[in-house]
Image (cartoon, rainbow, N blue to C red; front, top):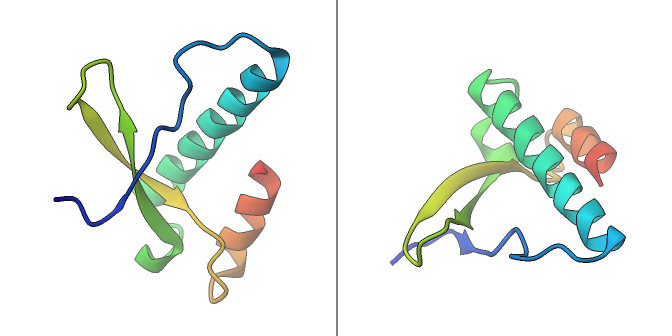
Amino acid sequence: MKTAQMCCIFVHVVVTEQQSLVVIKKLLAIAVSTITYLRGLFPEKAYGIKYVEGKERFDEEKVMILREERSCPGARQIVQWCV
């Protein structure tokens, strides 16, 4: 059993312009979060764990997503930029 939040980040079919915008924003958030995590720019507590579902039912990838942590103003600012 996974203790982190499970989510379906992407819709399977993008039909509208609004859905396309949401997908692009989520991709940007994942990219920025991954880069900052791998470079160690913020403390571990500034990230949350999410799982992105893959093509197969049980095929999931763990991603570290920046969150608005009060004690880390830099992370909070980046999250606000990506929203």
